[in-house]
Image (cartoon, rainbow, N blue to C red):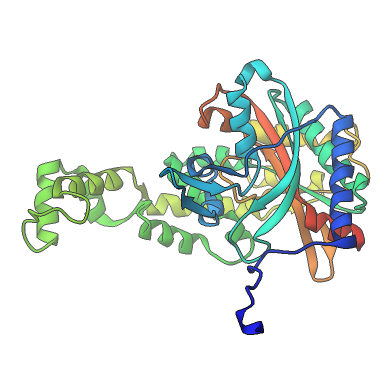
Length: 387
């Protein structure tokens, strides 16, 4: 009979008794702490239009969605995180007229990756205020809520994506190329990729071009380009190719050629980002090293202002590290960004994190409104509190 047993899916968990009780207690502790600071509970649908999560999230998240077509023909996904749903709700409820909005949430999220595939997030979003005061409020909430949930001795690893974007602005890269560079920071910092290797990958993806052939194609008109492509295909291609006609193929290739960045410029950008992203350490030391590396921008000043005021924000006994290589795997972050970690038996363990994402409200159809927030993986927090 055991051969007919239906097994629990990989990455899913059954919780009961004391284990379930610890999870609920930690969630209630977070709720009580955030409520005391004026953050109201918000619940959002478990199922949303897939477009909500792919329009701006990008990165690894889009490859981890549980997505399907519902009986009404709509492409939908189980939520992989809360922030996009919270922003959608904010825009639907009146947008800027609702600001400032302070919301907290908790509930299951789903990602098809190698670890938990269903896990519980608790978090908070602050929509409306810009500036360092709001950044400090969210960092203070994130740090001190952990104390309420029984976690001590954690590390706040803080960076600022504005610094990296300001550096990249000197290279005049296209938006896809800039996002590609920022998305490669994790692999660069971990030693899993080199600037040259990422530049080659960008060429294979059509984001970068090199050599006279690419420049020539980009400079051709449609008719001349059609002759070149006909030659590449071994003769006129009068029949549609898959879903596209020959004319559509030509225009698509021209668009890619004209918008692709030069591979050598992209590699130079990757080399500089690799140098800056490797800077981490105590705030004063890391900021000084960034200046020595030639970083001069308003974003660096914002980061310095933030970390020098952390004591005023009551961050507690958290260890603070400035790390210009911090990334969260979501493309909507625009400003300061942070990760919260504890020490586990095998090394640092990330509990979660967040940051500022000022462009997300507008990207999802609302008015341009500053916003920031964070989320924790509740299962990881409970494990850290236990020990």
